[in-house]
Length: 208
Length: 208
DNA sequence: AGTTATCTCCGCCTCTAGTCGGAGGTATGT
DNA sequence: ACATACCTCCGACTAGAGGCGGAGATAACT
Image 1 (tube, rainbow over the protein chains, first blue to last red):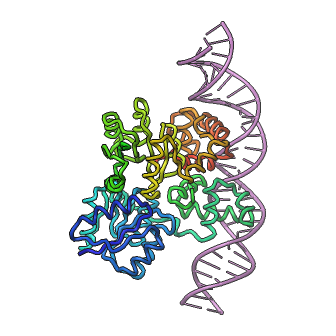
Image 2 (cartoon, rainbow over the protein chains, first blue to last red; image 1 turned 90 degrees about the vertical axis):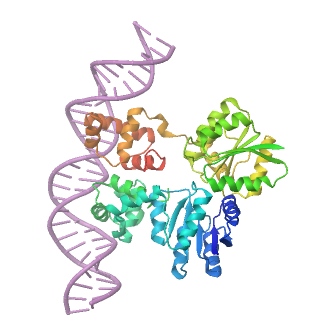
């Protein structure tokens, strides 16, 4: 029997998945949770073999919960979500997710992914796999080289602020802002602040 | 008996919702579909009282399907989705959606929304309702004022291109690009190209 | 025929942005 | 004690961005 925990704050999704998986003889649903925090605690208590995890949740994202679980547990975490954009996929994989499924998958595919995870085989959605390929080919997180202060400045640039406005907001001189911006541009390998702003948005460095 | 059709390309969600609603005595699931096109045809055939519709689907979005159905049918369409951002909510309501539910809702809430829809009562999620209020207060989509050409230029600006690069890409003079950019800035009510680029990204005018 | 909208282009002007090459201060770790 | 990284700031320079005012061409609607 493969012990499974389902974490998803979408009531209908969670109930639906559980209802479906319960009909499978070799799967045992040992717990369910509707938030990241709750889920992480539940996994530590129940020690399941496999965790089905949604990404977007009210209290504690799936990414945070995945990180938390992977610190101490050895279970396989399968991300089950509707999203397959860069900002969601890569942080999830880096956090220690084992497989990445989309909610467009059929119930059978999900059951199959659970069995494979229990055997140590990853299952990555083709669409997500394509993303990974292009990612690993060249790109790395350029913005990880940024210092704290530079990241603050970049966020301001990403909001469309001018150097003067940034200097007022951060209580530093305009010259200093220019220095930071220049360093940001070279670290991100872009030519001007507009490209830096685009970079910030594409890499999810801002809220909206 | 309230006749219901469920349209959702997420297998687990559709099956889950149906499994849940089937236990309700007064609800009769008369059909299900996994794409917008299929769903629209099904609704025209089955003539249900209420339709549960997902927004993001492979073939034919929920918005297109909603528009198509509302042309000829008189049923109540309840949007059931994970999204509540502007780009999804307003087109759906404009297309003729009757209620707007989030997948974070409990199964009981959804069953309740179906009964209310059958009685002619709308159910709008609080989060979505808030969006609607702010929307009707003042905001309109500024970029709808943009001409075709200006939109093309804005997309280039959103990619981080300079005026020179845009002029090369669109085969027009740099002076012309400047004129377009100036017009874009005033129409979007922003001060510079960086803010315009941010606007473009926030309003989903670009792919990534 | 006249109006309106759109796309195209020009010159002149100002100002922000960005580069280059410095410099001093404060942590941190070796 | 020394090196390194980070944050701060300076002056001088160049180039791109953006405002202002104007203009010709086409197409569509009245």
